[in-house]
Amino acid sequence: MCPRLGDLKALEGENTRLKRLLTDAMLDNAALKDLVGKKW
Image 1: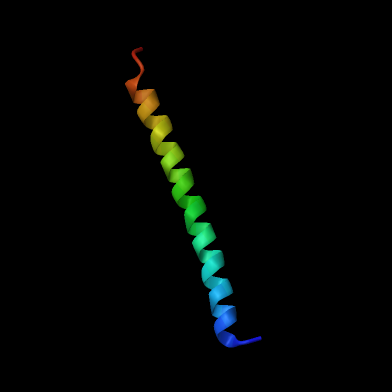
Image 2: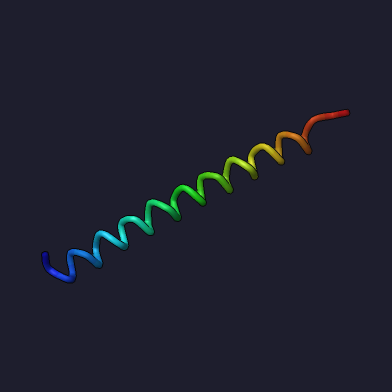
């Protein structure tokens, strides 16, 4: 296996992990906005 291919696989894994973190943060943000927007 080419060393550069290993680097590519590692970057793809990191990219997937970061996308998941971003999605979680966006969902948290939407939930908080919804909560703040509700009248008590």
